[in-house]
Amino acid sequence: MISKPAVRREHLAALVNQLPLFLGLVLLWMLLWGRFSWINLVTGIVLAAIVSVGFYLPAVQMSGRLNLWRLAVYFVKLVWDIAHASIQVAGLALLPRYRASNAIIAVHLRTRSDLILTWTAVSTSIVPGSIVVDIDRIDSTLYLHVLNMADLVETERFRQSVLATEGRLVRAIGSSEDVERLRRINAEENGAAGSGADPHGAGGQRDGGGAP
Image 1 (tube, rainbow, N blue to C red):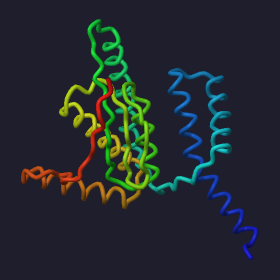
Image 2 (image 1 turned 180 degrees about the vertical axis):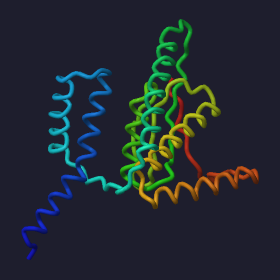
Image 3 (image 1 turned 30 degrees about the vertical axis):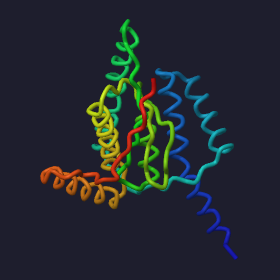
């Protein structure tokens, strides 16, 4: 029979594990509105509570590691990406002869952490011009709809930007295993690039078809 203190500890652990998701939903709500106000904060908290209770998801396990400097770098780069992409999307909207050349891009992440997968998806979706349309949790793959992808060079550039976001998150909040895995994969890819081989292999990352 499980003792009451053990049950309390399990409930507390579940609450702590759900806290990042709750705070992430509140942050996402605030970012979608684009400005801070108390009414936005309160409604974000209420909606996050409804989503957390009504659409319960398995708890995302925390890594137990936090690098404040790397976290600051991540947030600064995220704000810059949002501002830069906002200007780019506004410019596309004003072009009189702009022809849409959108794409569905699959990005296979290098880590297997639900925490990193979730925050990479959120970080990418709040940047104007791209949004996650599907996630393969087993394979750690994000499928994103992206604006203005004219050729394979731009597609690969975008894919690398998502992987760079993942890398910043791993260095900021990833576990020691995630950091070591990322370091090993980077070393393997650098070695493959130096030898002229495809770092992703024959079954590498996949592109979706362009949208009209």
